[in-house]
Image (cartoon, rainbow, N blue to C red; front, side):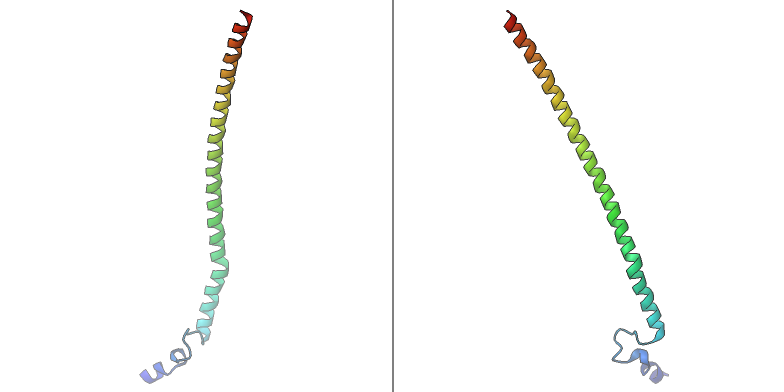
Length: 93
């Protein structure tokens, strides 16, 4: 029995990857099919998720920057209005 087991095709020294019989061919085809279909699908899903998260982060950063810029502009407008009033007061005296 050991002689039959170890002298079979699946235990030959030339069959290092053990892909010489039809059962292994079916398994290898299923694994390769999953690699060409499932893994790219997973990769695209991961990249899409990362892109959406990055977009949300950029949107938040831009919104915060716009708020700061608008508050700075409003402050500068108030300061210029006060300055023009002072100039008008000193000019009319």
